[in-house]
Image (tube, each protein chain N blue to C red):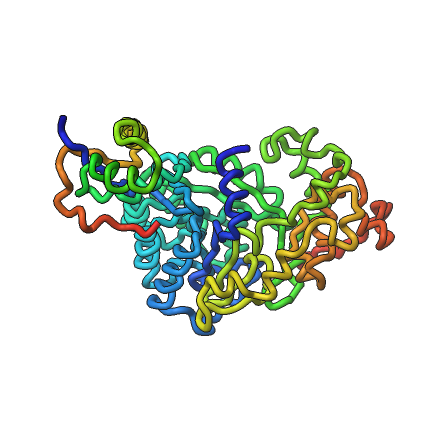
Amino acid sequence: MSLMEQLNSRALSLRIPLSAHLDLTYRCNERCEHCYLEHDDKGEMTTTEIRRLLDQLAEAGVFFLTLSGGEPFLRRDCFEIIEYARGLLFNVKLKTNAVMIREREAARLRALGIEQIQISVYSHRSEVHDAITKLPGSLKRTLAAIRFLTAQGLKVTMANILMRGNFADGPGVQRLAKELGVHYTVDPTITPMMSGDRGILRLRIPGSDLRQVFQNAELVGNAAEFCSPPPPVDDHVMDDLPCSAGHTSCYISPYGDVYPCVQFPLPCGNVRREKFLDVWRHSAALAEVRSIHARDLPVCSSCAHVGTCTRCPGLAYMEGNMRGPSIADCEKSFVRTGIATANMKARGLAYPALIQIEACPSRPAV
Amino acid sequence: MSEKYISRSPAIAARLLGDEMMIMSATDSTLFSLNPVASCIWQAADGSTPLSEIVKSRVCAEFDVDPETAFRDAEEFVDRLAQHGILKVSNEPEPNAAAQGGTA
């Protein structure tokens, strides 16, 4: 067991929230077509409220703190918050589009001892990236920022969300990351908007593209192993927890709402009304999340993939039942291994259709 | 023998997990987990208290260990963390040691 696994296990047994994700704002200078947020400011926490919250998170034992948004640097007090968080000895990771980071900001981040900066890049071509962000010149500014950050010796991760509109540019972004000497990650998951609107799910890549991702050794390591059939299920698997959400990690919105995870919009409390530790320890919603083991999942417990599926309880919740399957993850398990999930069998979707009908992209009039 | 004064590097993240301290270096992301004795020394590393005093008043008071062994182990521990840039070691107390931050 690695040291990190030992720490996670210890945090779980002590019920300590080892990780917290705090969105400082939902406002953003980009308007990414796949974004799950509404960008209006509905009353963000003040600097004083955030300082108080950070004190409480430190007291609760949070070690890994992700600061994100929206675009966190749209807050004038962003550096003040980061500085305060580092004073409390959090391991701070930033998620940003980086368009507001120049040489001076990069140097400040270095001086503050930021652990890692994750930056979204959707294409190596401006016409594709900027069309997704709806901010002209955004790729140029983001790449300039990455150079400033790496020149300071900061660890940068280039995160690419794979969608129908940029899937073909994945290798180009990967090459770009290599040229810039930064880590590269891809994520083919498009989540419904936090409001529940599922319209953006149309951007999800089809199964055939997903298969290419899962068979790309540069992305998944040993592709044969990654795509191999699931091993037999034992008691140990059935006692497993779905993920760390609500167990050793949580999410806090700019308005102080506490959720198990950024992708799991189950209201658990609000730090403007209660202390964080009171929410963490006494929320009935969190208690319910924590009570669920693999054997308690009515459909997934009978599925061959139950031990290896990436089932996201938040996505399942947004689909109507936190104990239910997440259709997006059923698809991933099926595409990865070629073995239908229990949910697909129950829905009569055990085999891929012989004919797939998709809407034809509209063409300009000739 | 000159005294050693130890202070925590600002380029780290740290948090007490139960009775063990976890520390991550911001420079190379190395993760450390300190046992209760080492955590005790770490928390007392204020830059102004001599290591010998930390061992005597904190370690020997809180743990069942003889002073000689405790001091020898503490010196070894301090040297190892200093090699990773986690602790700073000096023969003089830090001039502004009272400003030592962090609430891990």
